[in-house]
Amino acid sequence: MGPMSMRQYNKLVRDRILEIIEKDDVKPIWHKAGRSEYWKKLKEKLVEEVNEFLDSKKQEELADVLEVIDAISDLWGFKRARTRKIKNDKKRRRGGFKKRIILEKA
Image 1 (cartoon, rainbow, N blue to C red):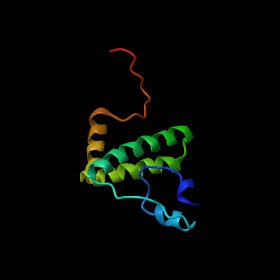
Image 2: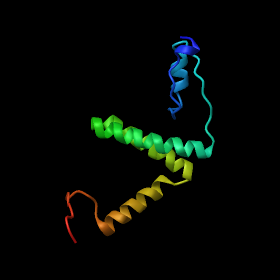
Image 3: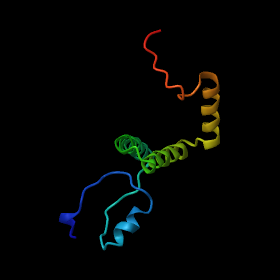
């Protein structure tokens, strides 16, 4: 596949994608994102993965959402245990969503 027939992506991909592409004798063109570009691409990836889950309702796609959330946590230096504690504290104070309550008016 020559350069003229290469597909254009310009999106964040998983760390091993380059070696997977190279196994097909394709030489990918890529660069390492700086912090601001990485943040921008993580936001795009989060929306992409959430939409894929919403369309498919598959657990594998939900796992991809969690992978992006983990990357965002790493970027901002958030400890997962602290995030879980905040989530659990908020759930204790305000509840979760198990009762499926739809507030119509207040």
